[in-house]
Image (cartoon, rainbow over all chains, first blue to last red; front, top):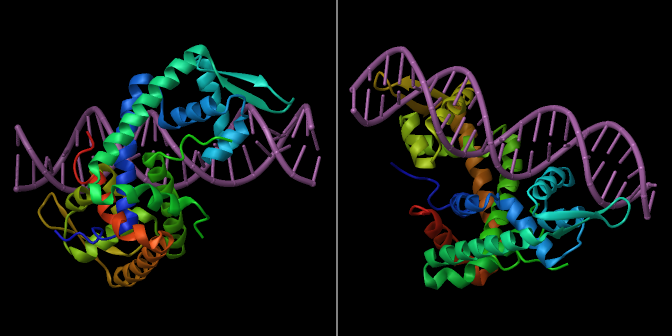
Length: 140
Length: 140
DNA sequence: TATTGTTATACTCTATAACTATA
DNA sequence: TATAGTTATAGAGTATAACAATA
């Protein structure tokens, strides 16, 4: 069977992303986390007190979607939300959240290592800069 | 604000894929096609008479999801479905479908060209082989 | 028994619009 | 006026389970 998609980088991008996302999310499942939740935890860890909006902007998550996400992390006892402003909510990790985040980070690093290991060495160093070039600016 | 995701290829992969997918789908919207529908048309064009299942397997689309997808393409007058087997349905492009597929292919090629143009030349040739290595085998 | 197509269903992810309260 | 958070909702995209018909 002929495969017309074989030579299209855009299609390969979509398939590679789906395959790797699925791998990561299945590994994070053991920690009771979804991928987006883990990335939010990582950002909070590096920016304690950052507001929901600021975190959402960094990760391109809509304000409206940050609300249930942060609420779920709070219910799970992973983060605390404190009024920083009257209208803003600053997020920070709880003690338990720090532990879980540490574990999630280990999972994520392992995932990244496995991902890179799959890429032939000749191409490996080119992957990140190539990918970053694709979403750095507006897509037009 | 510190960005812990900056150096993670897996995250860059997800973001790049989302950005590029959105660009392509917004361009295909003018033809009344979604991205998945366009890829199915491309496969049918290269493999006239291929069954729904075979096409789904090539593109990793579940049988259950091929049904409404193919039905919609037929309703739009883009493809015809003929019994090839008693239980199998062979798909082929209609005359109108060939025209639309040709236009969609032009859109897709333009998208791919723009995508590659965004990647610095030093990395460009490495992108496709690196991506293909990521979904060629099972993700484990 | 295995496969094809189908139906029904559900879950994730993301997007939009409208509201409130604060700045 | 603009921003933060919230609520409700909708649309893709994809996944599973069960069924009838056929190989």
